Length: 249
Image (cartoon, rainbow, N blue to C red; front, side, top):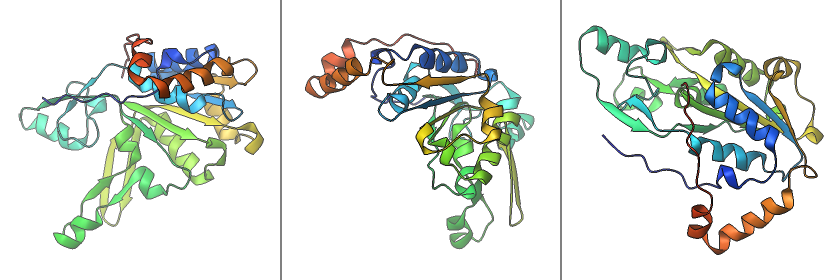
């Protein structure tokens, strides 16, 4: 069993203010069935910093070793086709521990990058058709974060929301048909000055919208903490121990 080294990020408990935003994030990782959280606010209010710190609060998860979909060893709804076939054939599954994945979806991403596509390297070198998993596969049982989600391409928004709602991703490319689990906590953030949210996003996040503003977030204290971390990294992290959170994923 391998030991995953934790990311060193700005501590979640060191973020000053933003109580509604932090509560919405915590509730979603405790129960992903809530449906995700959208955070709208001005630049510099700690949206991205808080979201990236969230993954560090979560305990490591048990996964099937070397499985690109972070398949569960016991839950069939969180297992890839390859893992299910091994179980049916009576093969034993090797367990590994992995930190909950935190996947970023860049604005310039293509549908192939999001959903997966043909593995060109194997096609050219070995002459076989193989599937190269995308970001949805990597995000299974983890967090998928979309910054500036109000600027994301309409088509990608539809694909993303479909997968988030169903918990599965289906890809058909050049004779390759793949269906794999894609259960993740969908987190979006954006700046209202850069455009309004699309109707389909409002429908998706209507029950979990948090607003961040510089005036109400204690941003001055947050900024001082950012300065302090550069002066003494070790003492800074020791000053903010992270609480443990149990996730249902």
